Image (cartoon, rainbow, N blue to C red; front, side):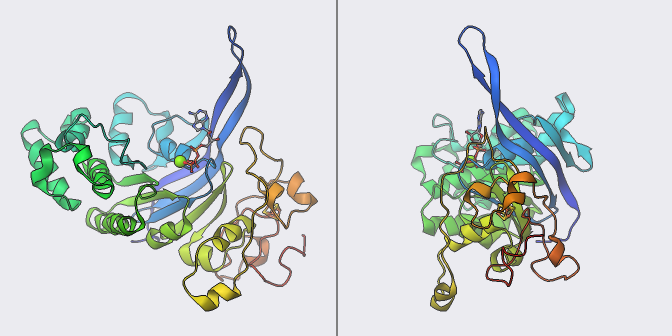
Length: 349
Ligand SMILES: Nc1ncnc2c1ncn2[C@@H]1O[C@H](COP(=O)(O)OP(=O)(O)OP(=O)(O)O)[C@@H](O)[C@H]1O
Ligand code: SF4
Ligand SMILES: [Mg+2]
């Protein structure tokens, strides 16, 4: 893992709005679901960027945009310096080969009527240049082996495998075209805890072996910590805080991150005793009608007037600039502070 490497993806101002329509005969647009609403970050070569946030905050939409399954409403995704959101035809197909997705649910994302060999080899039908016809079977066998499955089972059907094995099949398919980037949308969320660790270990092993960069989407902060070099915390279509795992887990400065972390089980009893549990009140507002200013303000215990009036930019908070300390990472909060720090929330600037 080389988190200091060059950027393989550069995401700038990414927006995806889904129109809300009304009327039976004449459909007219009455608003929009702002699923992703101005997201910017870099994915560096060889790193794993964890993306976390509550249900509905836009994680899957972001994932689909990154792999070009959907077109953004606005913004850019640069791959090797080229904005891929405007590509079509052959150029788009060539890029798609290099950015692959692994889906959440191994039970529904695999076609039950196809053999495992056909499922894993399917990308070769779309990209025949990746493997000449005569070599495909052998390539699929190798992929089965790489993900820890028995190549002899190439003619079996998905229902003959366990949940964890099915996720390995999904991963093998994602690897078939030897991509540079894999976007994994909750790849272990549907699995038992014991199996989750095995699949996460497999993903880590594959990353080193194939020089992969990962965007790893999850709502469970503890799963993301194990695999991520950096973590991006998402709330209602926007990024709240981005940092290395040490910065985010040990020195979170955004109240939302602090609340999410307070819900993660801590094995160390001393640390547990020292920690305060923050209960988030209220529901997540509708992404069709997000709060003005800071989107988190309706649930934030530190909210002040400025929070309703000004959108907090995702930058290194002024008070931490130049300190070089672990709190000096980007956080979209007007009053960013480490939990329990003097002036936490009070010294409005
Ligand atoms: N095709 C679509 N049409 C309209 N609205 C959509 C569409 N896809 C997603 N949305 C809406 O966009 C918002 C973000 O959805 P998304 O699936 O990206 O969230 P998520 O963070 O992946 O949630 P979860 O953790 O439940 O998977 C939600 O309000 C959702 O209802
Ligand atoms: S900007 Fe205001 S409402 Fe938003 S997280 Fe910071 S303190 Fe809370
Ligand atoms: Mg999702």
